[in-house]
Image (cartoon, rainbow, N blue to C red; front, top):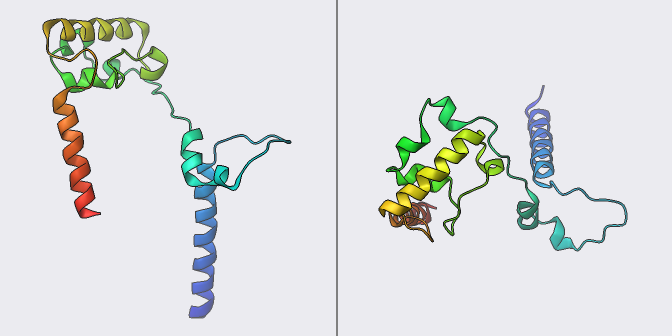
Length: 140
């Protein structure tokens, strides 16, 4: 096969792969009669409609850990709290009911002891996230 045909085949294959990747991003179900603007087809708008999948396995069962023993580990606790300090629902965490109750109790215990703030993310986690964004901003 000549080099020109190989290049053309690779380019065509790349275009098809790009089209499949773009198609995956558009998760909104369009129905007949829906009205849309060109902006609705952009990648930014597609991110809004992308559904986040909840974990299907209980992380504490997989690791054979008791959530009540993790009340001192604020990085684990913060995974099960919202940005505003509320405990996440079990449909979002993927935990069994028993472990969901235990993690809720551990979070309340950590807040009560004063290890975790009750209304926002832990300052150590905020610091890590800030440093990570600064590092990616410099290299990118």
